[in-house]
Image (cartoon, rainbow over all chains, first blue to last red; front, side, top):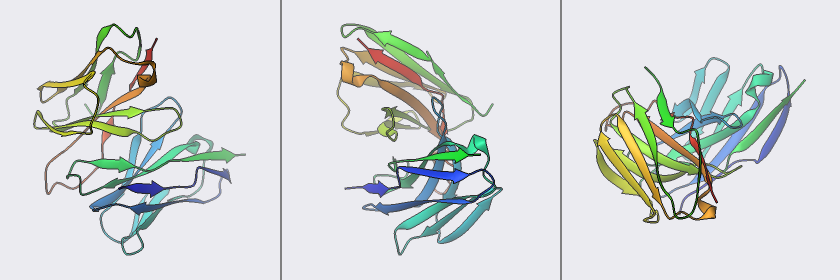
Length: 111
Length: 116
């Protein structure tokens, strides 16, 4: 079966840095994505890692270690608008187009 | 146009009703998806269409019937639903081609469905 585990909730202070972890167990692996979803909104694509290492996109960075079946999303210079749910998602052996989402982490940014 | 448009935004239907959810994209994406999302849960894949052909059905009950009339449109026909089917139904699209870098899905805002 497939499992992608994330912490359920994280709280961080505005202006700080926060890391959201994702550990996965899948029958196949083609890449790890991250999505942001505000309450009542649609998931929005943030980043994608197919290979080991760090990918940086503005204030957001994502890291992947395939040997450890582990990745994380790093958010820097936190802003109040970053309060949202964050999902990791694995493209797995179910097919090129099949993506399975993690359990989700609700991030609360406080002043 | 970099959007996926879903209609209606909200839908209340009885268990004997028949209704349809609609999804449209004009980004030239050749893969389109239906996801179901319950409150405080991750999206769960229901169906995948690739080049207008159904390529993945995640063992979804037959009361949900997908249709892809052309490369821009995706429908989800609903019939004899149960109250537990109440959820946010999300449509998404992606490049959907082997060898194309994955820039992720583009999701629509969803249809919030309530079955009474």
